[in-house]
Length: 217
Image (tube, rainbow, N blue to C red; front, side):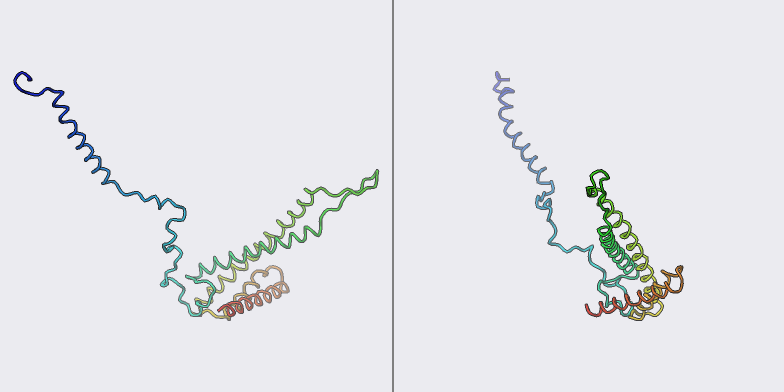
């Protein structure tokens, strides 16, 4: 072809190479511009905390509409919320109180040292034995008090919610009646005397709870 004034293949490829490279670069830029923009700030552990946490918001239309329920410490959507709050709080409180009682009992009844029959010297009890004694008392009293408090909270909230639905309002009378009935049912198998004690204690506890809510409000 060069005899008739044409160009060789090497010259043609040398002339078209820059244009081809430019076209490929342009295509690459277009394809990269079509990709979504990546924001590295979203990977930060504290990213998004400036926005409202919507899953913690309670819908006002779903709150309990029974008269007097707005005087509670926490917003409630009905008897299920009260049941969870009351039972859970009493169970955990009873578990902690029972654990403290067990700790006190364990420290009071620590094993004494043994006397060596040969030398007559007093040997202190091993630390593991003392620790085991304390732990046994804690695990004995803690779950017992916690379970009892949880059952009382369960009974109280069920009766209280039932009275609220029946009377159409929530007041101190419902709380006192719920405490008395919960105490009576809890000790119903232990005889009249135990029922009377339990009823009086639960009524006093309900009265103290009503007074506490009034003080906060």
